Length: 245
Image (cartoon, rainbow, N blue to C red; front, side, top):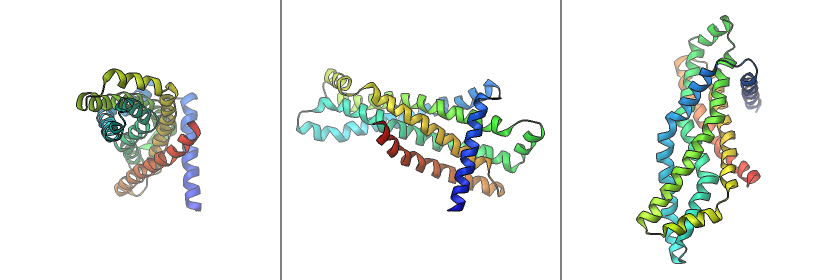
């Protein structure tokens, strides 16, 4: 228990320093843009494909039940609510963990075991500002942008399955979606995405920054980072849903 408290305390302090240096003595803007581009733009194809088929699965699963009551036109609303509130934030965040979070940990961890972080300190460069702050910024800003793309992709996936494959009335599909899905349903998902982005970047930077044990330690830190981030996203999703909705 004491070990867990110590780890949580060190991670919290590192995160707070990272947030602090975003506003005070930040590194050059190109470092922020580089991390944001790596996290967001290069993850778009994965998020689009995953969300498109997730929306399609929702439509596929709900069509059979709704067809019994001649309520197929409600599929659009179900897809929009499911993607906006839950699936888009969670799926996009898990994709970021798998693709970017692991790379963050491995990158910083390699710098730690090769003493590059020590070299930064010798040169007078604050490693928390240089390494942690841009990644926290990228997580908090980039994940919500990916969630917006995931919402759109998931809705079109549901539209394709419902309208093009099952022949649901397209006009009613969109109209019932507009009637039943509110803007706050999608805004709540973006609130979650901001928090998930902070979790991903903070956990990834923490395990990388405090890596020890050589190359084997880098692999262990990367594994722990992915597992911890994924668990925290799923656990916090329950509490955020209870508070936001």
